[in-house]
Image (cartoon, rainbow, N blue to C red; front, side):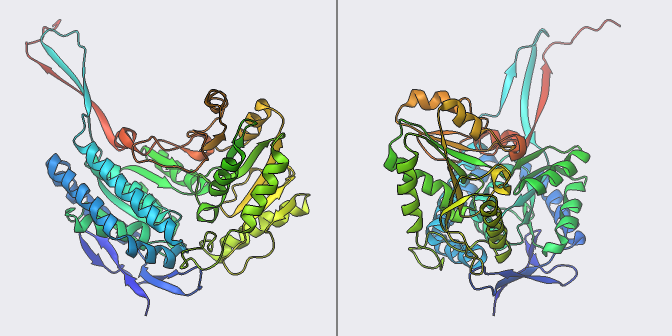
Length: 486
């Protein structure tokens, strides 16, 4: 019998008010891995009720007591790695290595949040008033609505709530329909078991057909004061528009069309390994994954030979096997979407170097393309799957032009053994993140993470995450009675 989980509202696990539930499908087997409660708008309002009721106590919680909860949660997260391995394999076809990496980074996100709780927060300002004290202070907003995605569920489920909670807010998280346990309930379990008070973090799970109604009810609730969303650009535009209609700040981390640039002074062996990781980690289902490898023409022929051979040998199949690199995509629809992009590219003139063809269930082969025409959908569209395009360039100007030829602006890698050369190129790339002599996929809890343009706005991570989920206030104290003109 599949596992079943209910909603988490006010510290209690309760069924949806309607009594409905929905299946959580294992993409490798095609069978239900679990069932979860299918919330409706009434449940969303109940979750906001609970978060709103818990806000006053949580926002006043002693800083060292709050910090201890986060540190204990980080240790618990580390100890529950094997549980996460099972959950991620069952919900999203995640490989063992990917799941354990999720746990390690999520635990460090909790530790970074703990550090932020007792870090200095605010400024003493200059003032022209005699005997005056002028301060800029940061205070929690209230209830935060969080939308957690499926592709790196433990990492992104933790990121969706950690900074907001550390800043003193309470949270209602709407978990992805494709990983409701991994990205929502598992993270909440860890924090609750570490001592997080009831109602501070509430988790809503839902059927896909109810997603729009759930989001609209959550964002529109007047007690919700900020929103964060990680996911596709299309859905992010809807969430951002909804938040703006209700004058609520939002942090949006959306899609990418990322490049790895192999400059003429790159180490070829390093470049092949780095580009392979960038394109095919988690079967390409990471917002920072490289859709394009841009290679200087002097290296292009040899790079292409070595890279194609490496990708052709990547083990694929059962995510439960420790050797698997290319596991199933999140569902069969995703695999067919990727296959359609490849078929369209080939029909319009692209050349398949390895991979291609029809998927087997949710498993799409690792695919490398060359000579992609600009009228192919893949030229501008995000692959979000195990597909990458190799394209040569003649000089730095052409490399920069190609990397910037997208509406997105998330991440980029610039591979070179000449740091000065790499930095000069990096400064010309219009992305929120760029790594010199490394590839495009990286995340550290203390760093400002996010993009711009169609990749979203706002930043998670470090002090930038705390600033995103707190309000700056100007407070003054007059130690002398001011004089007034009348």
